[in-house]
Length: 205
Image (tube, rainbow, N blue to C red; front, side, top):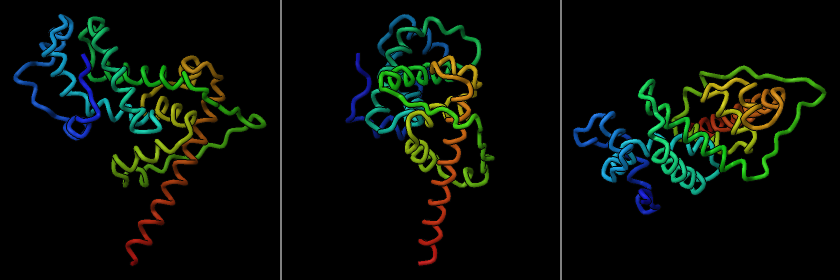
């Protein structure tokens, strides 16, 4: 059953905390394991907004994020029986969603540029500037990154994978992963500076 349609995108995206009709998370999960359609629909309604945020971080457009979300829920429902009830269920779903995003994006011809002259130029993360951004602004800036930069930044900075793990997942060298991260950080900081200049100019009007 298809639980998502573009007609309802505003409803699920804006509603992150739908009522679970009195069911506990474990009861919802067990219902989904039994292929109970009502529990599947309820799980979608409760978590679609939060998982959509993951999709938007990996996608280069809203439409692509919607496709990733649809595929992620199909996979979640097909493999929910593998969840061990240890650790965060939401975390398990987010990892599943990220993996779906990678599979979809890897169907494209992704380009991961190598490090030039074997040197890496790291920029320290400007945490104060990032903390001043809204979630919508940060998602927009991340979505503007080239595919390779965006994927590595998400996997390292947000998902917490090491460069060796990312290299194995993406079939690249660890050094290439480090290079992509450095370039992603540089581009993000340039975008943040541009955004701050725009805000300053607007405030002075």
